[in-house]
Image (cartoon, rainbow, N blue to C red):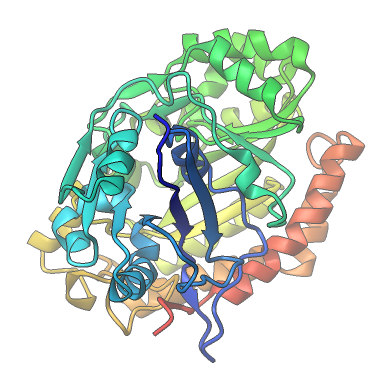
Length: 449
């Protein structure tokens, strides 16, 4: 639909917050905000689109615009509300969407003229038309289904913003697992969808990079669909990474296709080395592959795949000692990267509801808005330590992992980080960058006020 009158839509990606001395957090490890590029691609013709990435840009509230669209995540909710309030004070209508908006639409509605829940593909064009005609609805709900059917993200909006030199691509969306703590599973109602392979291949061909990150929450949630895509990737000669559950290491054909299609490695949620924790969190994919993860790690090393290992710290069978031992296990296995995440009670998840029923939530239950909450702090009372002890144990893991001694020790692995010159270059460039980010983020405030 072409409009007779010019219209400007401004898309905004909020930053986490600010450092203790008040400086706004600027993310050196920033990636392109694919969801906002896709929204721009879904916007009707004739509409001028602009992107402010608050992680880099200074948002110009006085720049004329007809509609502001803000992606809200739980960790960025406080900053998102600050930005929305500034625009609304100037009379500019604001629509807010994203996972947090779907989990807590009533909260988000306090700061928005319109709240969009669910997937955007089916209704975003209608939102823009309604705003243009001055009849924006209070609530829109997009139905789930195949991601971005026939739509391409507007990658021209990323120009000049110095994102990491990796293009983000989406193959699948959602997850059918029912992990207790997972907001993604709740958001998608335990469903998983994949795009047609030919559309994924066309999008890859339409952008210039050959280093790609598939943003799927679990690339192998549908193994047969993943294999179909991997076969189509082989002749493209790309390099790629994604996120995958650890049980994929038990499928020899899948592992072979990973290597042949150019996979460098994946983010893998090991979560815990304690099988009782895995049972409590209902991590069925990990339980299926659990033998202390020895076989899974050996398979990944055999295929020269570099792993970003992710751990969730603070489940009920964790102790300070077991958390510190998890870090040492990661260093011993010489993983390329790792994330030692304090377990977070995301709203509307079974984990949040259980802690609420047990009276274990801190910060009045809404840590994402509480002025005293700090990034990487525990937001609940763990079972076998204090909240402060959990916070300190997580910080000790991040410091130990990011130490110069750890970086050097993990680098010297012929099967993974030294397997090829490019793999070593990846290791050598990104480990120092992530080290800086770890120290900069620790204890920062959410929001900037």
